[in-house]
Length: 202
Image (tube, rainbow, N blue to C red):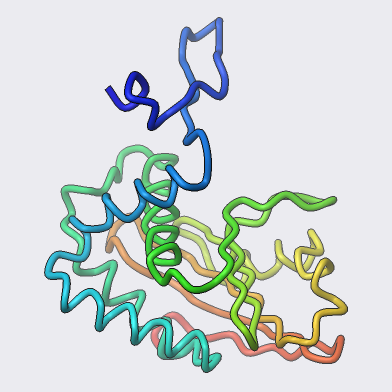
């Protein structure tokens, strides 16, 4: 029905498996669909607005410790019925798409999902006035593994000359708890790297 109404378009076709890859036709439809789907996740409108404002405040201030707590609590509040624990790929997509919805609903920053670079594809980039956040996600792993991928693939190189503070953020989600399993970050300013990795229990 979404395809016939134009909300989704065919992006690819696997003849051997007889499966289709669907995607949004443009950014306007993608953003509108994200807002519509997010209504079920956030529930009460006034409460969600407050929560989104708090997340915006944390990201604008570069307060990743508070953002970690906000994200962890939000995911823990989503019903287990939305999760697909038996399918690792679907489980990972659930976390990625939920994160994408949050970033889109902030509504005031440049957000890029699976942005391609010369060495790979970045899970998510969020550009704030004073900070740039480079996110890499893992499932049932560690933040250190995610951070290592950011470094090895040179995901921060396109921002090497950017005057803003660059945060490289690794997030591991747990298929068992349905929320953040590990969270760590390093940051770069004036072309110098500084590292701070949060433990799983901090």
